[in-house]
Image: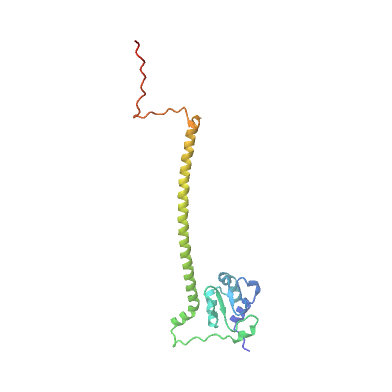
Length: 203
């Protein structure tokens, strides 16, 4: 039986460790594994097993050993010979041969290596951009609602202040049957003075 590559053995050890299941673990049936928290995986686990913290480099290594990414919205990888409880199958996984330079120029070869990781990043960026646009639209609607509420509150406060002012003015005068008294009513210019009644002439 062929001896598995160190990269495969270390990756299997990582995935099979239950103490880091919140970062990386098998899927439900053990046919693939999921990196749940890529930042923590790159920062805390990669340096311990691979002496680097380059997540993209780790993904490229998976690609060269024939792993495939299963879904676009999470980092889930599978290989027919990389299964839970079947560590002996690791020797069946072979590294892909590098294409001859005559068949592909170096720039194209590099692009092919990065397409697996770069394509996933592009899809993730598009998803995040759509999410940001949706949140920006919702924020605009909320701001409009807040402006309307503030306008209503300002109008209500103005009306309430006017009512209080009128109450204070009315409360400063005595009232009789609900009518203010003791306030001299100003005579308008159109009003004529009352006529004096003439006394009867004495005969």
